[in-house]
Image (cartoon, rainbow, N blue to C red; front, side):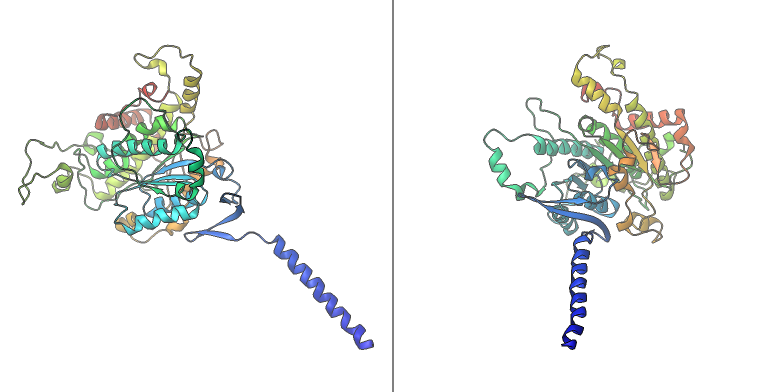
Amino acid sequence: MGGGRAAHPPCLVSLVSALLLLLLLLLAPMPLLVVGDSPLAAAIVASSSSTTITAATTTTASQRRRPRTFLITGSTDGIGRHTSRRLAADGHALIVHGRADPTSDAAVTSLLRDLVDLGASRVAYLRADLGDLDQVAGLASDVVSTLRSWQTPPPPGEEEEEEEDDDDDRGVTIPASGGVSSGPPMKTPSLDCLINNAGVFDPIPRISARGYDATMTINVLAPFVLTRLLLPCLVRGNEPRIITTSSVSQSRTMPNLNSLFARRIFDNERREENDDGGKTRDDDRRYDFEPLSPYSAHSLYSHSKLGNLLFTVQLARVLSNYDPRGEEGVPTSRSSTSSSHLLNNLRRIQCLTMDPGTVNTKMLLAGWGPCGISINDANNTYKLATMDEYAYGAKGARSGSYHFGWGMSQDANDDGKLVDFWNKMTECTGVRYDDLSRDCL
């Protein structure tokens, strides 16, 4: 009998231990959702119609509000790919861009499927060579068409059918190129964030389709054109942001602009014959010319990254100080409530640039070797695009500011150099920012 009494305390201890273990399990943190090699703390909340993934990071605006719509250029590899995966895990709608054919490129196909599986609310892939400014314009048209297809309400009677087809609604869209169809004017769709991420370091300087240096065209002129063409969508976005990638490798000062943007004039009437007797297209033979630039590949890259900084600083000034009364043909007073709202939005577009970090991308490996961090740790772009501390009006994040890098060029504080560079981009592209009332307001 005494032995029975002696056996009771261990049983009691076992019961208490089991209860404590159960309590610990109930209070344990939720599992980690892994995106690439970077874990994002996530809670998975099941609803009647879908599974919603919300990241636990408290400083990210995008994770506490409705899903936002992003366009990320150069998003099929490197930092763009990593950023798009993180945004997909937040449940956003993504338009990703690249040059490869998604029907034959396994890496692109894999990315698009990953974005859907990670939780992106919508995914579209658009192709364009940013070295050809005509294709940049086509990309902008395709972006507008894609956004419009996402945001246009279905015809009466089709709402129920679309709701039932929820799985297909989150699939990958690869729209046919060709831009906006003709017909009656349609409502301008909204875009919440444009990330000008695409960039090149070309060990052999080349000439673009319009005769300018290819590095300056892709890294500088293409963002200038694309941003202007998408401003009508951005001004209608939710707390819109324009993120443009610069670099700590930016030049200390901008060289002579006429030399930097020297142009090779193509004689379109004198076309060389192919071996098969056909005519050589400009975009086929654009790389057959000796480079005009007196600058090395590394210098061109550095000048282009300084160009991204100057573009962002001046863009913020142009938008925040925009006055439609200065435009030809625009009334001196605009009583429209809608126009006033859009003008206010235009002035509040947050324009930011940054050093993405020294990251082992293909570009870094080609020019400098493996001297950086893993792509999966390159989160600077994602931070600028999503975090509250970089929103419009946030302390330390004024529009036009440069982040994460050291040694910003003093050219960014030189009004004359900012205006000269802006005017040179306007001259090279024919794109203007002084007529925004025409399509933005």
